[in-house]
Length: 283
Image 1 (cartoon, rainbow, N blue to C red):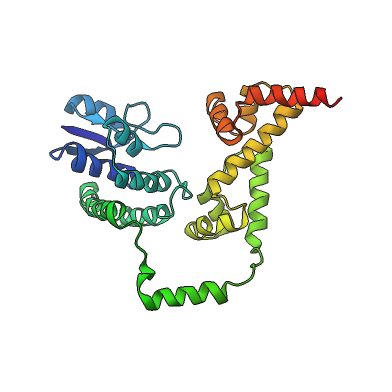
Image 2: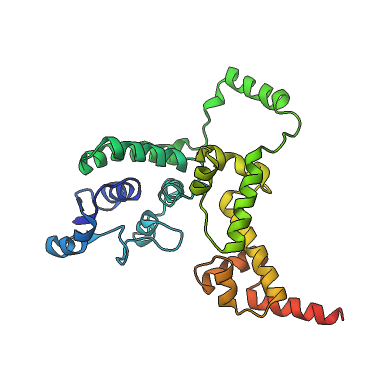
């Protein structure tokens, strides 16, 4: 079977061919062509297009094409699920999805700069994803510091050198202001954008973020801030749910309602009714 996508692959367009060849069709032919030729060439070559807007095998909400392949072909595998989170984070610049996402992004950004032949890059990428899958399937809980001497040094570090609460670094104040600006203006900001603005390594920012922001990852903290703003709007305004969803940065009302219920236990309309009833009862 033939599969076709855009040229110059980096993450998802290498991960998906790896998944196809290893779990769906070992004899699959992967074709890379310029973006504006994918659909026409797909018809001409009787190939299935993927990782392209408007086709079946594509991104959906915050999930990438690799996620859709897993769902479509019912590939239930804990190792693949772990890889999916890493790929999703790297491919969408949501490095908070998995701590390994920043490393995967760095590897393929560098390789794509060094290797101009797409199929040569795919061949190397196949080996990388083979290694990543072995780790995700069998070695994910192993740590580099398992040797006795390394473990002892780590214990000393945690016991003595990390004793006492560290002062929050200066970048945390700048980042709080950036996030608040996002909330006030309804603009979106990703972890990568924040790291660029702060001139901080994104892997470091992803790792350190939760220490200074309510023990939450970057994505979870942004969602919490959006829900807090939504609660204030539901309690103090007569905006429709669609308007509240827009003002708090959600793509649509259904997405907003789903996240709101997940965070609060109530859907937005029920929450608003309860809040208004509570105000009446206190009068």
